[in-house]
Image (tube, rainbow, N blue to C red):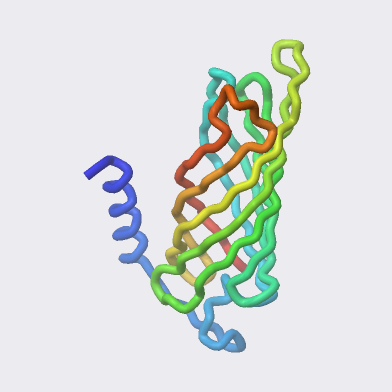
Length: 177
């Protein structure tokens, strides 16, 4: 079993052991986290590598559920402590399958615009990408969810000399109100 499989299995077991299904009046038994007219906010702290430099990544996001399970949202990331600094803005569409009670699968699509500061006095072109994601949310408590999954991202402004796509894991922590 690979390290990623072990981590995924551990994440599923820990999340399932703390799962709470919270039905709310007026939502037909659906947790308010994914019901129409609810709002979800998220925060991100992480690390990454680009331009052969290490970064601290800080991010915020917000989503609004226009229908049960269907959210429109936007995320913003700032990559600091490396050169050049990087800013990413990501509008997104996510659908959460609300029928399962313990694990709630999700799928989504996004467009991302990445902005770069000057790199050692050289102006860098900004880049666009699009992609999709899939995973599952696990209830930590009423209106608090932990999520995990995978993202595929395709870069639009890419030359054929480099890899124009990437696949990577994602984890999230969301609070809904």
